[in-house]
Image (spheres, helix red, strand yellow):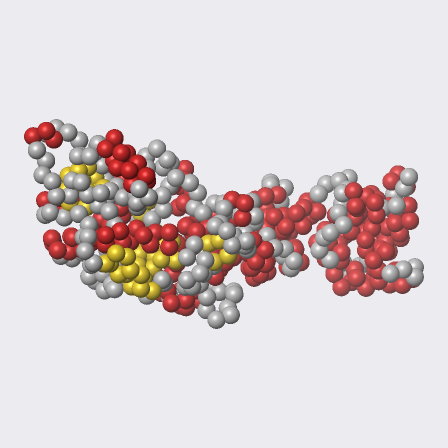
Length: 475
C-alpha cells in the first residue's frame, strides 16, 4: 500500500521515557531502510504523552542516537503531546456517529467488575455495561470516559508482512477507552490518529505491539465508514531481540542505550548499523553490509519470524572489521578526543595502519596508542617491570649502542639491524624485542616493535631505551 501520492511512508515513534535501546534502534533502522529502498519517506514521532516520565534529555538522546547511526528523517519530528486536541476531535466524531459511547462506570464499579472476573477465572476485560445505555438525569455533570464500540461479531484478520495471516475473534477485544474522564486521549487513539494524519502507509514495529493492531484497526474502519480516506496501514510486526541465552534482552545482556555502545564499548556507528540490520534480517550468507548495500537489498520478506539473539562478541568482531576499513584520519580524531590535548592527530593518523589491525573497539585504539604520548620516566606495568631484569637491561644497552648508529630509521631498516644484533649475540629476536617493548611502551603489548620505534622517532626511542639501560636503573 502507498499513500495517496503513491509514496510509501514509514515512521519511528519512540516514547522519551528513557534511552534509545537496541530494539528501538533496530525498529528505526528497518523503517528507514524500507522507506529508502522504495524511494519513500520515513518520519519521526515523539510519543511524549506521559508527561511525568517523558524528559527533554531522553528526547535529545534519542535524536542524537538516531543521528549517530546515520538515520535521517524527511520532516521535522511530530510531538504527540501537541496533538491532543486533534485526537479528541476524532474521538468526538466517533461518538457523534455511533462508533463510540460515554461510559459512566466509576473506578469502584470497574474494580468490582475485575474482582468478579478474577474470582470466576474469566478474561479481564470491560463488560460493555454502558455500550447500549443512554445516560439519564442522574448522570448529568458526572465524569465519563469515551469508549470505542468495537464490533463483537466475527473476527479480524491481519495479513502481516512479517508474521503472515493472524486472526483474532472480535469478541476478545473489549470496548477500550479513547478519551479519559479528564478529556485526555489514550495511547491507542493517539497512535491511530497520528499515523493517519502523517500519511503512514506501513507500520513496522516490534511484535509486542501485534495485539495493539487488532485494537487500532476498528478505529480506522469506523472512520472509513464515517468520512472515507482512512485505509488500513500495512502492518509488519518484527520479533523482539533476545539475549544470547534466549531470554528477553535485559541490562545483564547489554541492553543499554545506543550512546553507551559508542562511549562505553567503543563501537563505530557503521558497525552497529550493520549488526542491527542482521538482527532478524538476512540476505544469504552476507554478514558485512554497507549502508548503501542495505538500502538496495532491504525488504520485509528478509525478516524472520523468530526472535534474534544479541551477541556482544559478534558485535565486537564486526566492529573490528569496520575499524580496519575506517579512514585513518577519522579514527585518529576519535582517539584524540579520549587522549586529550596532548594528542597529535597527525601522528595518530600515521600510526593507525598498525594500531587498528587487531583492535575491536576504539578503546583498544586509545589504549594501544598511549605510548606515543607517554612522558619519561615511563610508568611500567608489573609485567613490563618484571621483564627488565639485569640481563635484559644489559641487552638494552647493546640495542641502544647499535640503534644510535642507525641511519635508516624505517621499520625495515630497524628490523634488519636488530635481527643482525640478535644473531651476533646468539639470541632469539624475542630476547631483545620483549625488553625493548617494555622500555619503549611501559607494557608487554603493543604494535610491532619496529613500528613502535619508527613511530616514536630516533630521538625519543633512544631516550626511552637509555632510561631503562642506564646504570642508575640497573640495580
